[in-house]
Amino acid sequence: MTRICAIRIALLIAFGLSMLTGCSRRAPADKEKVQPVTEQAPRLEPHSLPERVQVNAPAVASQGECAPRFKNGLTGTCINNQPCRGFGVLNDKHQAECSCYGLVGGCQEGQRCDTIRKSCVPEDELPFERAPAH
Image (tube, rainbow, N blue to C red; front, side, top):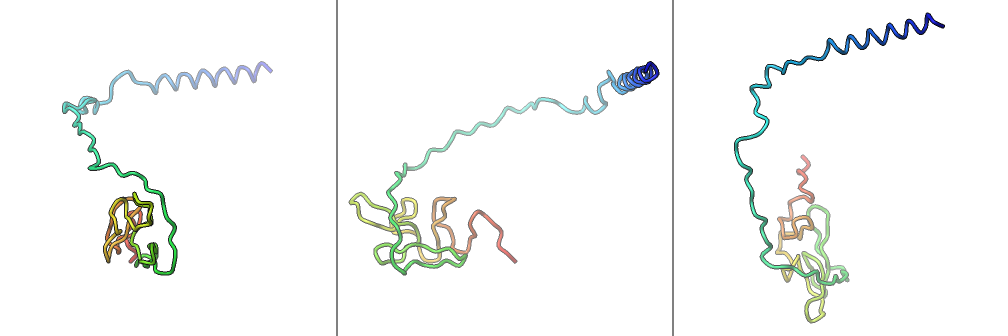
C-alpha cells in the first residue's frame, strides 16, 4: 500500500515540476508588435428612421384561381377576382385591396412582394438571398 502511495506522490511531483517549467514569465516576442487598443475612435452612425410608419393592416385571404405564379414557384394572391402580386389587406374603408407592405395595388409585372425586404423585388430573385442553382 505504501509503495502505491509513493508512486502516486512521485507522479504528482513530476507533474507539478513539468507544469512549472512550461510557464514562462516573459511576454511573447510578437506582443510588442500588436497594439491592444486601436488609436482610431469608433465610427458611430445614427439609426435611420423609416420614412413613414406602416400600420399592420388586417389580412384578407386569397379567394379564387387568379393568383399569379412566379418563376421561383411561389404564388401571389387573388384579391377581388384580380391577380395580386402582394397580399390582401383591408383598407381604411374595410374593403379588400392588394398591397405589398403599403404599396397599394401590389407589385408590377415581373416583380414579386418579398417578405424579407418588405418591398417589391425582381421576380427572378430567389427568396432568402439564395444563389441561383446552376
